[in-house]
Image 1: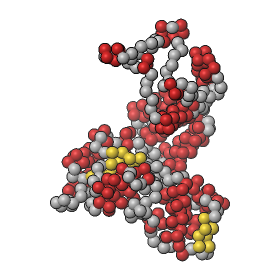
Image 2: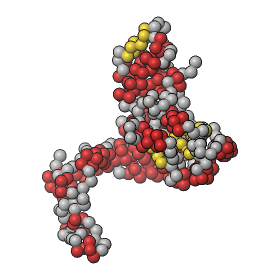
Image 3: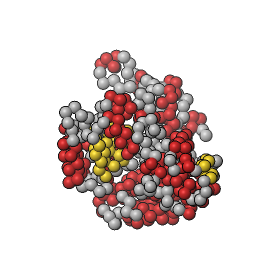
Length: 423
């Protein structure tokens, strides 16, 4: 019998849960499907959010021949063969064949190069799926010919909707009297991943001998502790381990961080994937508490490219220990998020005229740059003047946190701006 996740794979947008920003009413992908005109796209998102399913639904909806390749097993030869088959499958006014490539980020440069001609000529419509940032792993010529769409983890409402649908419509589960009495553990372990949710439901249901199955937090936790890998299909433990790795760094536990690093290395993880996460952690979790952390993380990334593997494990370990044992601050992370949310809610405001550049005589005549005070002409290289738009003049985005480095920055800000930076 097929696994539950496969039995419940949606066949149309009506059955598809989540990603309303892409496939909801009037959303971009739905419009493209309704017009039966699909351009080459890359679907970027974590596991279990419906990338492969969405590609299948698109092909089925527009009636296009559908060819698939896995970047894990296919080489340049297989790419060329499937492109040739796709070309031969197109007749007259039939929709352009769709070539779906799962885990496209694992394709080498030569493999990606072999796709370019077919995509440029319109011989195939490429749909790539990736869990990695395409700008890191997809070559620029191919990326420029594709629109990137981001798929989001399912929220609690989406996961609950899926769980209730499953226990009432699946031909096997609906034979059982299943009650979702408690769902906190179910949702927490699923972590926004629809496939993981379905695997957990199947695991718990199969652990019960009778026809009565009551989901409780205790029961879910007990099942998963006894079968730690049972709900982790297709290498998804990879994402749990990187999560544990980053949280160990954030929690200032270098021993735990090194342990999870060793788990990834032993499991054959891509070292560049680990190094990128270190760079992110250096900015997000350590930030201004120790600005050298970002320099160390970047140096680690560069060292990997120079020395390769297995020696690359050493700078990875060095950077991991340094980041884990550094003081922590997320003030920069909070500041940019707060500023972005402010802009989304209030819109973008005009630049104050004294801060504008005046490259033409007309702009100069209009007063662009007039009354701007050049900071270096004043004692201490500072002069108080307005830099914010009028309606945001009292807004604060950066709030320094308690650590030696940011205390110094905060003291300097108070010397410059007075009580504006008082806590």
